[in-house]
Image 1: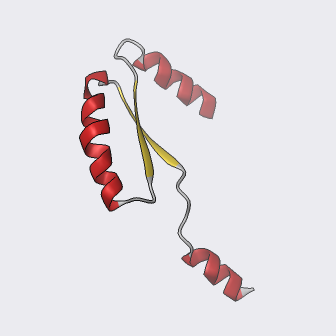
Image 2: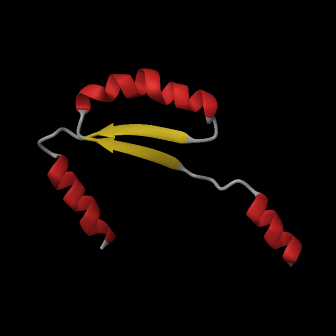
Length: 70
């Protein structure tokens, strides 16, 4: 039993996909063409996605996410 627990603790955790949310739609090219590829070269097992929301919709999008967690 202790061996199985130790093995589970030593295995890398699966992170799924990390999502970077932003209201800066204009930065999408920077993230997708420069920053995320550079990150992926150093961390190939981590998936990251940039998901911008326009500045006029960010308040409603954030409120919806917060209410869904309540």
